[in-house]
Length: 579
Image 1 (cartoon, rainbow, N blue to C red):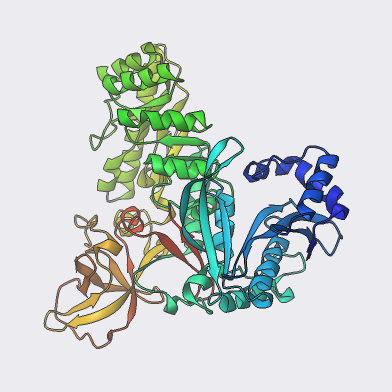
Image 2 (image 1 turned 180 degrees about the vertical axis):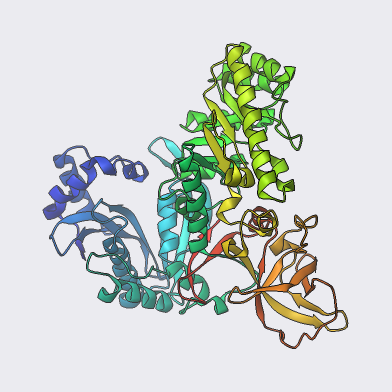
């Protein structure tokens, strides 16, 4: 492709881009309302040609000679060496293709190599998750948020700021040149290896794991995909859909892999998660934690913006609060949480509180959709037989509650159950409309101890460095404490206690006799699981190890991002932020 000054010669092609039906959603982020007629597009181009900042360029496909989009260089400040790429509109033939990456690269190279600028900027609406993801993919560093920075098309806009600096450009340029090289694409145009600009911007010219600072959270995407596919295929065999739980991953690239492409619905544990997913275009959201009445205003505000956000509750008091919130605006759909095992919240499936809660909600004008339960007691199982029994108990409790509500005249459309152990071993899903699970994406040592998975399924680990020795005590001191591993001791009651995590070599090979025996805020102490004194010389200071987590959810939440491992050993292909 090539970039050339935008002119009236491009008007017809560019107007066709704006008019493409599949492009309508992207135009929501354009700061000015898009032209509806060709004459309006021509008039806009004339105005754009008359100014020097921004400088608009047409993105032209060399193969067809057609203009497939536009972009600009703007806020051009030569005295400070700062320039921004913006007003990007890439049509369907450009967006998410090799051409988009090349179009970006040409302007970045021009800014740094031809003009000698010090700083290249990217700014976008903070609600435009696709644009933010593109910035990170291209190697920009996120710098912060300007709140209510603009008022655009009738609404306030928070602006996310990103930059690449001149000192970072040489390594990024080499990565773009590697990726854009013809031999990186097969005869069908598919890439042979991924663009690693995000990893390059963090780790340097060669995004090797050895360059990563520790502690760091590592993600094996192949194991993630395999784990996700295994459970999805299992549930598909029973004809019941999976509603992914986002609380473990908290990362759109990971969740998209888990969903097989497009994430359409999800479970969340916080309204922050709900907001993040909604900004990514996920409308069907189930907030699977009992609602605090003080949060109902935020719930209503999200629903007013188009989020199909559903709540759960387990008492007449909460039901009346939800119903009252609905009377002030619009009814909020809710499910009644059922206690299937005596381990957490919820009403008994056969008790009076179930019907009392339903009556309080409906009589107050609320909207009852169904029932939900989570078999937290499944974490006490130690065999497939026990998991199957708990899965049956979970299913029976939810279905019984739904049947009682229907007999009382309530229209119940959702019967939601789920935990990773019961989803993995359940054999009876009659009457169930969805299954929820989340930790299955990563697995962890708790799941290994429960017999749900093997060590080869664990997709998460924490990279750490040996920073000291305690030879008299037989301990390695590492720079991963509870701020990196969490303080979860979920395997303490298992047949094999994994301490605060099992050690592995830097390449991920398990060292089953070595575990993290103790943690402080920034220090971990690794020793033999029998706590015997041993020769530490095989692990000199500077040695890099990985720690397999007890609880993937708790460990992941200690980190802001994943270093995503590449297909080649010892490489990092990307850096994925967590929300």
